[in-house]
Length: 73
Image (cartoon, rainbow, N blue to C red):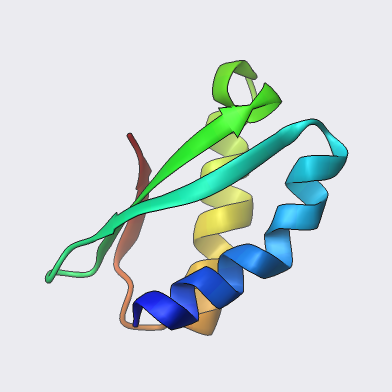
């Protein structure tokens, strides 16, 4: 599952990098929670929660249906 999540993150990473940010996979829990760290401009952007939920989480859930939630740490 971790490889599928990394592949999904690779798809969204160019969009984040275009705005000066990035995302790192921190952990995938056994109950389907994906923990990520937003870095660069994304780490302090006021829109980061929207990016996380409407962008990153939506894409990961599309690619890996067993994921229940994506949270920032």
